[in-house]
Amino acid sequence: MPKKAFNQQMGEWKLLAEAVARNLHDFEHLRDYLEILTRTLEQLLKAKQRQAALRAEAQQATRDLEAAMAVATQAAVQLNHGILATYTNRSEKLREFHLRPRKGPGPHREKPAAAAEQPAPAPRPRRRRK
Image (cartoon, rainbow, N blue to C red; front, side, top):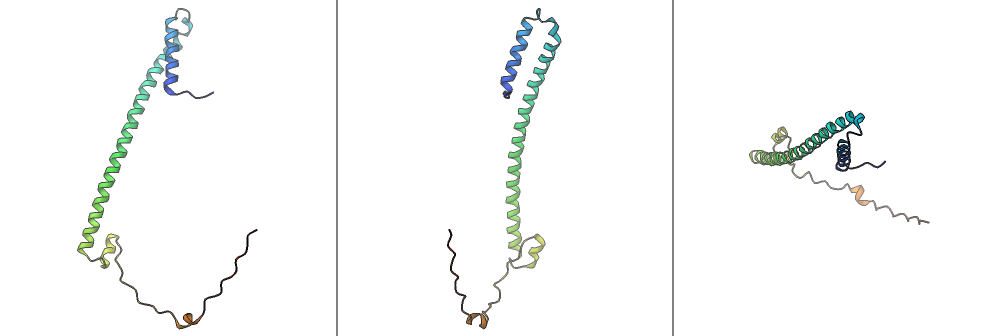
């Protein structure tokens, strides 16, 4: 049985309740079920409205969170720049602020003489795919 959309199902139940209410003299034995259906339809409408309001509130909370994250990111960037301006970018004090000090160029290494004399190995032929 395929699922029906909320509005379609609500419409069908509402039409059923109205039809039974108009012909209640024929369906006196179903009065209790009609009252249950009517009360439940009201509860469903209230729940759907509450759901829509909460969804909108959640979306607004997400936008507020993203805006606050952007402000915090900008403030953190400015703090990092201020710290780097106070201490040089090579100071070990930067580690206290979880920043990495810049290291200078390393010592120049010369290739060992033995490695320079050895010729490169000859390339191996590739195997053909079948």
